[in-house]
Image (cartoon, rainbow over all chains, first blue to last red; front, side, top):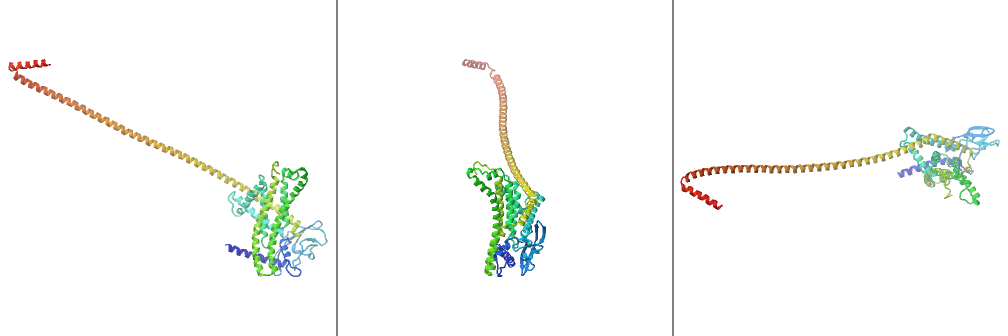
Length: 347
Length: 164
């Protein structure tokens, strides 16, 4: 059994390696024709206007994605990412402008006439987000369908997968971290957990986008938590921030500033934690793969594969832990905002 | 720097996508699911409670049964005891009766024997008297045929009288 699992993971790693190999060849060569590991790694970690899978020889296997732009004088415009690429090299660049718009080599949108333009493209991460949403929707709705069809009976199928998660989040996260007013927040916490968890896991697939390791995504999620926490903040919560009880009057200005900054550092920590954990994992895996091409040695290839497999397994763990931690901290911040304090005995 | 600068387009889509996911799931997945879970937990709670109730009822029934059984056993013992007493009494009575009857019979037999004996004695006395009379008659007829004899007799009587 163990041997089988080992063999399977080696095979998977080899598979991953193949993909990356191709991508490496495609993405990043330095001017001298050598390999550029930083470019290769960043190519995988960052967002892109096209979904690049791998190369076979000089053929790029990519999925062109919609480019949606908005400019106050031009309105909304729709293109495909392939419109802005060189047909030979598949590279973006100012020289490949289309209709007065170009995508530069850093994937930024620009206008030939120098005007401002906003990018609402369905990028690789947006496409990935839709896949994650579709999967979460499928899981949750088919789980809910079970209860609609059979009533309140023992779970089966998707319900057997989702129900333990729902119960865990309700009982172990919401009930313990929020307290008696937990019920209202359970749906948000479950959705948050499932989205991050599925996003983390799918992000580990070869060829997938690094969705939950993107700062814009973690920023949005953290912002939603921030809004939810502060909208639900009760009298005690705000009193704690702006008139912290138990603090001597001369210290109050300092404490209020600290508390006020604290409002923002909480979601900021959420944003950074998830982004760093997922991106760092991807970078480590990609770095081990990059070693193969730097050393061009079979021996390193074997060692790399083993290491990549090992890191991949750790990443599976990290995917779950980070989803759990994000949900737990969100619940704790909500708990802090809705709790009825007794301020007399403690601060 | 791209890595740590959020892009507005992705924020827009993420916000839109996540909120849409949130509202769809709240309406169509989490509400029915959490409702069903609560319902199921309530029904499990109820089932446990009624099982507990059934168990206590069973225990009660069993206790009652045992009480009934004990009562029945006591009753049986009583009945047996009474029956034994009754039979003992009956035997005693029968014995007494038999004794009495025996005694009666013996008494009767004794009385009969006494009567018979008396009758027999009377008979014998009568017979003796008769015989005596006859003998006396015959003796008298023979002895009193002379005066001397009569005189002797009278003397004899007189002697007897004196002695008395």
